[in-house]
Image (cartoon, rainbow, N blue to C red; front, side):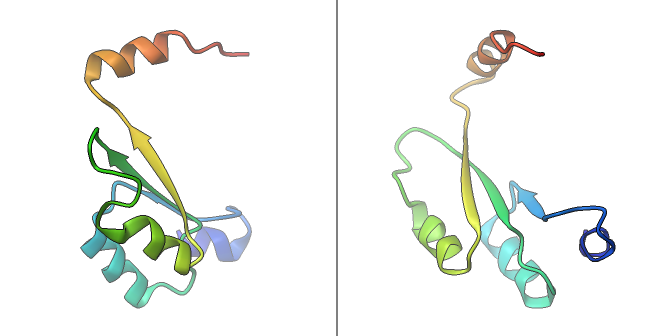
Length: 84
């Protein structure tokens, strides 16, 4: 990913569904910090579970919540999307 960023093929790096320990491991060797970190949240996890959202903010990473309550609700929402 960093090669694509360095060569101009990509404008930013993002990661999805990395646990906190995998993210820490990535950051130990990364030359470029990911711009976005997507994490799945469930009901009851609160606004800043385990302090991950605020930790990402301190590092300049946009913490994006991906919320899926169930597979059925995801499919229902996807079926309502309009594609242009």
